[in-house]
Length: 219
Image (cartoon, rainbow, N blue to C red):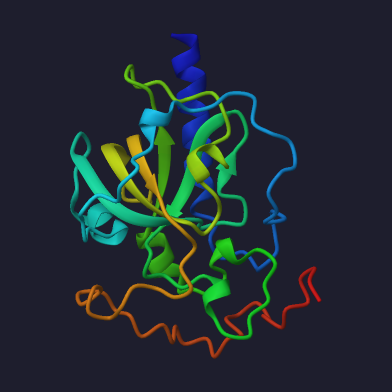
């Protein structure tokens, strides 16, 4: 019981961090993979070898699904500068149609996974907390990064159950299986995102209210 209380408190605290999405590029993380190896591996059967056939995207799943509903959807690892948490297999995922800094020509942001140039309302609507769980519903006690190839900005297809959702933007999915792909050079096509506002101009002319002149720790 105590473990479950600690786990829930940790998850809720981490979920709350997904709401801090207006921070400037480069704040809160290095974007670099740790040099040390993880101490415990997530079982290989938690990772799908073949990509599931789905066109479901995170934004619509978050909008339409209910707590307790089983879901399958595409996303990308990211949504804040540090999308992972140490000691627990939890990470932030973003709708694949949102534009990370590495997908913007000429943008050399050192932490492109924070999506700092993206429209904040779209980012709020299109991010989720993914918690990788075992057959008993317990979160694997290991950082998810590098497990099964998981890394910032990679495409993932998540299969699991919605366990938390509220009006403040919290959306938690207990993932039982994940497919891990590559880092896409650009978002999905307009055809695939036909019901999504995909103009990506965001009314910021690339200065987006926090002087995005790229002086944040990169040359």
